[in-house]
Image 1 (spheres, one colour):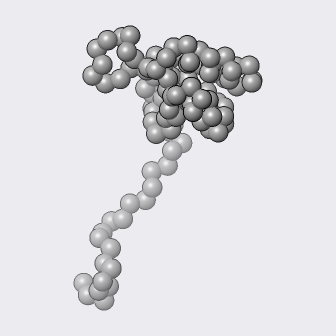
Image 2: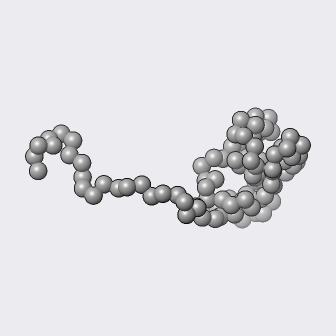
Image 3: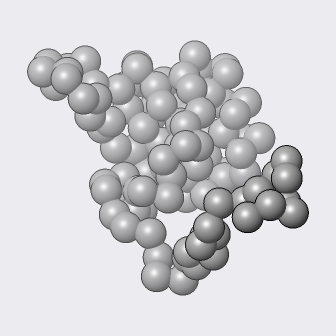
Length: 104
């Protein structure tokens, strides 16, 4: 799970609460595309806490929950790759006829 916060103090408070509750929590700087000023980058908390726990903290500290790109991040919050165990689904070899399956 990953929670994003614009205020460093809020991010550190969330990290401390998660660590006190026995979860892993890593604080990293989130780099936004097109953002030149390093001071404007938000903070990200990477954690193994259940989504409901992080969601409540995100609501309390005015952040947001980011679940979309988690498979692209490794434990340090940097771009990684998906595991080799991810199976590729079988794709069709021809178009599927829906309206008139009797004609070819």
